[in-house]
Image (tube, rainbow over all chains, first blue to last red; front, side, top):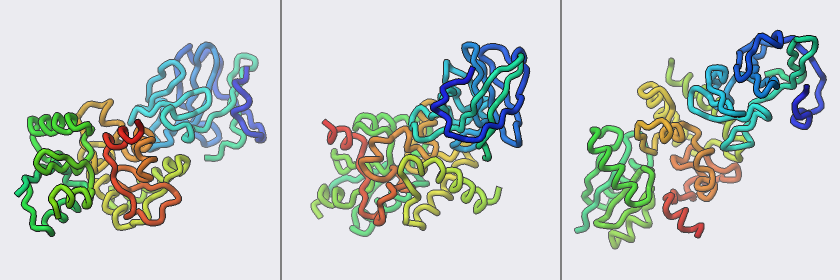
Length: 117
Length: 82
Length: 113
């Protein structure tokens, strides 16, 4: 269950166990610290999405925002980002780093390879 | 003499330059700082700006019935016949 | 927070936002310094570093589009001027910011017709 491989550059994989699959209900989100990186993990339509939890505008925690369909709305200034590719709705050049996810044996893993914030 | 009225912000350097232009040319003018105005005045300024197609970008300069939005010395001079 | 420190923090955060959109801080360093100081004061008073040259209405949807850098919400208009309204940011190829004029939104929209 890997979402859109094309979004991700060739990079070394570093799969980190994040949470148990059943810990995050559908449509919910949670903030995690993985390998020293603040990560936002979301579940939408049964798929897990992971991205940096820091808004690229003023570093506000996206985990405190609201999820509207596939858009996470920053709680500070309402900037909207697509959780599928990290793109800012009003200027696609601005992106939140996104990470691959996979589910194995009921555990959710996030690929933190190449994260280094 | 033409009547000059401008809406400005106390934080806006282009508003300061606009005021400086009129002072340097000895043109009397009235101004209201939108950010320092009371609620009713703010509302009136917003309506005036919207009526001229501007979503409150300052300075907003009125020379009689003509309006210049932004700092534009050439346009000010032309309207004043300088 | 200390004025100079906050100015530097805003400068660091905002440069990362404007860079991918093809903008840079204006070479008019005195103007940039003045505008950043206004933004720190506005942030202290209103909670956000709003544009020092555009009016707030108190309506969230309107005002959030004026938090600096507000380029994403006025992209076409600013691209036509090669600067943002307050002049803190200019296109990367601009060396002489004084040559850039403020063009009102109405003039810009009419020029597109």
